[in-house]
Image: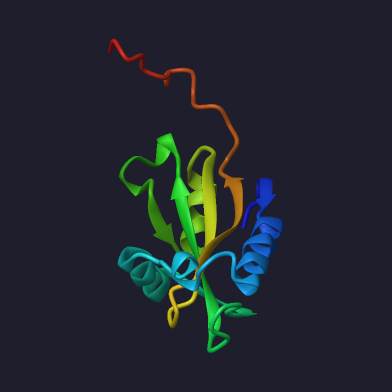
Length: 134
């Protein structure tokens, strides 16, 4: 896969939230609130991780990669597998990927990482951004 750029890791935010849960300042119901759409994406597009769920400790988490970008058109806002990400990185201009970890047992979910993939080439000379007036 092409090298990801502009990587943001949300591990400190995750640790802080889990510390609040363990201390009782935040309820489990507040953090175990994955939507049915996210759970379905985890089932069909997710990749199993080696990390055990920090809340229920019953199963390993599943990582789901969501893609967003103007050049992706109808694909933007959907979950993609690593193979699909690799193909998209070779054919599309820059787009953002957000990786969310999900527990399919207790519905824990948290943003793990975000990064940019793509060809990093500017669109060709004939292509330009349209204005709102157009």
